[in-house]
Image 1 (tube, rainbow over the protein chains, first blue to last red):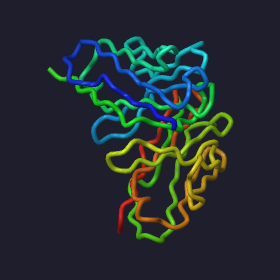
Image 2 (cartoon, rainbow over the protein chains, first blue to last red; image 1 turned 90 degrees about the horizontal axis):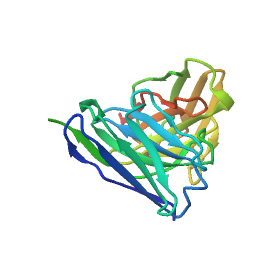
Image 3 (cartoon, each protein chain N blue to C red; image 1 turned 90 degrees about the vertical axis):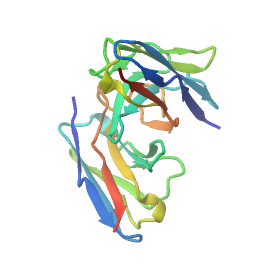
Length: 121
Length: 108
């Protein structure tokens, strides 16, 4: 069955880097757009980044543009989020989600349970 | 950036009642690419509705979506106990993708 499982979260200091992983099963990341969405404690959802099925482009929210990079390893069927220059306001639960289609303009139809990132000194 | 404004912030209703959620976009949402998600406490979001009115796989028919111009509506015809949750709208037709602030449905 379709599943995405995030990992890589933890407690880090401001200004440092962290890489999140999202292992996909039951489908190929080469057939669907893939997304990262986060949720700060007690807050709403914030879309961060998307990569379409063919990896031809990437789109980012202004809040993370230039600091975060979405990528994938098709041989591992895994999505990544490289997060640099982390700030305290990046503290959140980070979700990986599968798109319902190939293009970046797809709804997110399967979500993982999230991985928690805490940025604190 | 398209801003989505959800109202009300909280709905207090009883099981069996009808729930209506509003999501207003600050500008036209391309191709009606508007989705609704449900998030129960401690759980990941779940896709309910996409393209403004299409139900996602496995979603009961008590959930329905509609639109009029830049106003989108999610309706739950009769609330079940498991429907008490937070509901978010999202537009995915324009970058950056944006979510509304959410509406919480609580038991009255």
